[in-house]
Image (cartoon, rainbow, N blue to C red; front, side, top):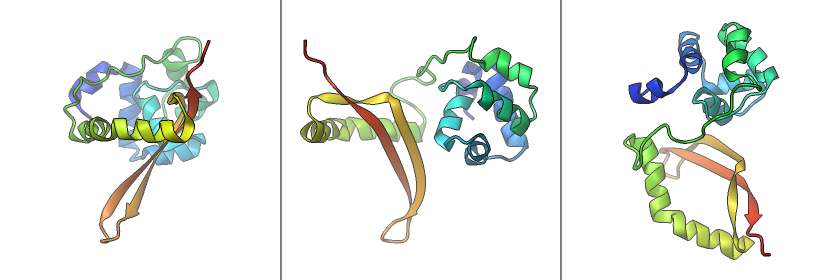
Length: 158
């Protein structure tokens, strides 16, 4: 993990990353045990998702971290994520920069296609899911398939 980003995470989230690494778990492993998607679990580890108490109970067992530590720092009464802000713009990390570049190049075309199909509105980033798949290309190359699915929100007229 990038040391600059690590320094922005709370001590309990750093502890979660350390436990994940020491147990050699993937986000998918943890997600399956939590009954959550791996992208949501990764978001939780970065403080970008809000867990329910049941998530924290299970996570305590999975990571062998005392439940009270998780509940105190991430519990429903005390923790509300500040989403975004973990990296600067434009991003320096090559992977994140490529996503940024994709939006620079294809953002307006994607917006136009969505507007043609749905009308005047946006895709929710709140009622939203993201999935990552490893697939083979036509040339047998390894490819990344990312699926973003969000509720369409038409602009209100008043």
